[in-house]
Amino acid sequence: MVNWGFLSTARINGALLTGVNAIDGAEALAVASRDQRRAAAYAEQKGIARSYGDYAELLADPDVDIVYISLPNGMHVEWTRRALQAGKHVLCEKPLSRSAAEVRELFALAAERKLHLSEAFMYRHHPQTKQLKSLVDTGAIGELRLIRGNFSFNCSPDDPRMQSALEGGGLMDLGCYPVSMARLLAGEPIRASAEQVVGDGGVDIVLAGVLRFADGVIAHFDSGLVMPDRRDVEIVGSTGTLRVANPWHPTPDGFELWRDRATEPEVIPVEAANSYALQVADLCAAVRGEHEPLLGLEDALGQARTIEALYASADSGQTVLL
Ligand SMILES: NC(=O)c1ccc[n+]([C@@H]2O[C@H](COP(=O)([O-])OP(=O)(O)OC[C@H]3O[C@@H](n4cnc5c(N)ncnc54)[C@H](OP(=O)(O)O)[C@@H]3O)[C@@H](O)[C@H]2O)c1
Image 1: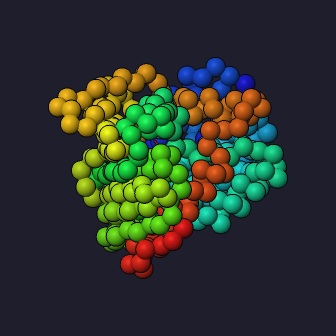
Image 2 (image 1 turned 120 degrees about the vertical axis):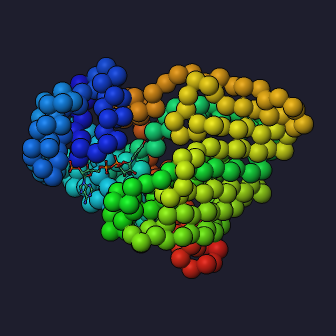
Image 3 (image 1 turned 180 degrees about the vertical axis):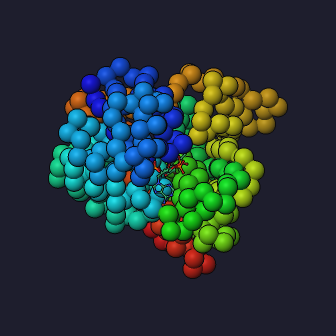
């Protein structure tokens, strides 16, 4: 049995708990909160055996194998470091960090302690994402030319996402997804530029970015915390286009392949799957020594370098070379 410990009572825990409960050999053993009563009530409600009123106490529990970090973004690095120092494997919510130097430091610590660390881009585990990657790689839309994506919603003003002290921001919370998809399909960018609108909390509430890749591929995307619910991706090749209505939370409705000049799309169905359960299964298998996690140092580093470059561009008004 691989025992999971949850650092915080965050809303997103519900999705991961469903994943843990769906996987044989995984158990939600413990939860920690800043508040002991909240931790105990949460544990009782969710059927979790142990609760702690201090994150450090959960890290000291010798029976916890993997710590899931669902704290606000600005706490990810500190608590990932502390969990690794306590000898725990870590699944940290995205974004692990906006700093490439911090990502290197955390993965060096994990390697030194022979522990696994993975960034929780759950959509990467879904069969739809693998299908998209395979179609692009096998030339189903010809040569890859352009990737366009977005992710936005109207966020409550008191949410940690709206606060710079907790490293909120639309790019950190949402834009990181289209960035991740563009990198998956096109490799690592060579140049980044972005424009942002900063809100009262000091974070980007609207940001639009452009990434230039080698081989003539361009990605452009937007993210925002003061806009309606939007989430889609278009992948354009020389002979066709993939239109993905649900890139981050795929549904069996699948996605569309438009051949050049076609008047109707081919609808490509997608296997029903729970991204969160697949993510849990991936890390459990890694802990049992069966394989490396799908998402490790290379991916987290590429993400952090790109996010860092996009913010540097948005702050300076200059294109940033990577
Ligand atoms: N992969 C996905 O599908 C997905 C979806 C949503 C969010 N996320 C990521 O998951 C993380 C959590 O997001 P969420 O929306 O679930 O968070 P949330 O509901 O706002 O919860 C964050 C938790 O962190 C703890 N916390 C500690 N210090 C805090 C502070 N100063 N302010 C607020 N909370 C504090 C609180 O738990 P206690 O009071 O119990 O300690 C709180 O419940 C973020 O990094 C986000 O990017 C991922």
